[in-house]
Image 1 (tube, rainbow, N blue to C red):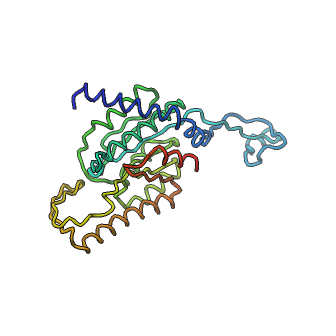
Image 2: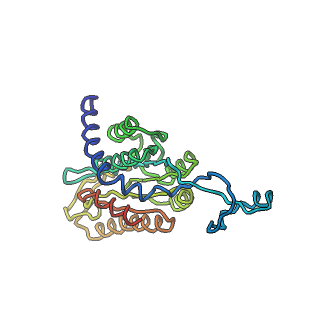
Image 3: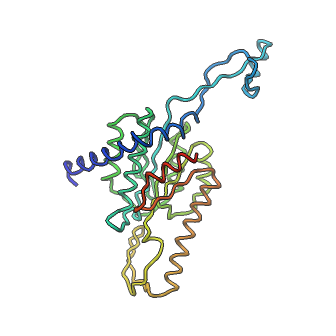
Length: 287
């Protein structure tokens, strides 16, 4: 993609997603996430009605009079977008690729955070972290994120969610609002998600295509595994083959739902041909 074409595409995504974030998401985003981070402000004398859990016993002992810690809402939050760029994200039907929807969702969330003067960071991952952009503020920063989402070419086509979560925990020392956008066709990340969720507010946004859920009966078909690059002949007329595929798909889906639920993390499911705006708004309002 040449520079002119890239800039045109970035601008198109900016116009669409900024409009969504301005008119729809910023208010919901604000009410869903603002005020969750509290930072220590000062110590003052205890007043009737103060929460006794906030008593500072060291200061109280020093002055022989009850004092409480005062906290205030953190004005600045950090959003981290964790985006799966493995081979399976290039899948698409009905002229709509998962990657395109993922880019739009990420851009919308970034502009929503910008409306609230928050920092936004980006982690692009496959089976390793391929790109990390540290959190910063501003429109130009968001546009850089969108450019990377559009044109970054992954070195690997495999997925390892656990590695991405380890990287998150290692780089984000303070609490962050984290949106992990993937199809979650992976496993073995239960422990790392549990650890990361204790510190961060994590939401898994699963983007999928209806054609991935089942294999249609098309006889002998040559198939490419987007993550391994392996090409093989598959007999889709075989009921056993179709059932095994569906079982494998369902196992990965159930693992995703159960693991995120047990970790206390949020979940959003959106199909490429569905309105992701409705799905995200519903999620924000339910928080």
